[in-house]
Image 1 (tube, rainbow, N blue to C red):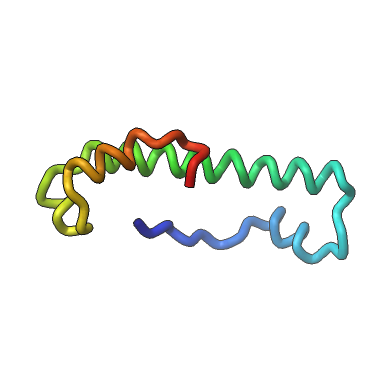
Image 2 (cartoon, one colour; image 1 turned 45 degrees about the vertical axis):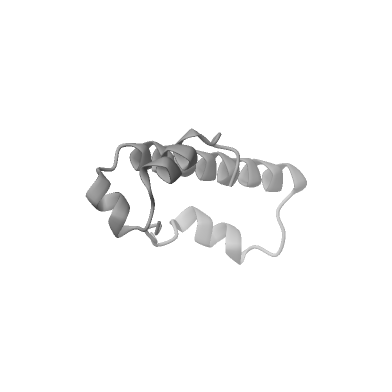
Length: 77
């Protein structure tokens, strides 16, 4: 599945232009990125479970493969 690319926010541009972040800020940013990845995975897997057979065929998955992917925990890639 593809992910939509969005332009970076002004906050992210500001952070990327800094030489280094304080350790606590790095931890906070890393945690925010991790939670975002988990949320995207959960939504994607939930949507995959609901796809009709024709669309599953278009993406090259069987119903059983989609069901398996849909039951994976959000923290597993």
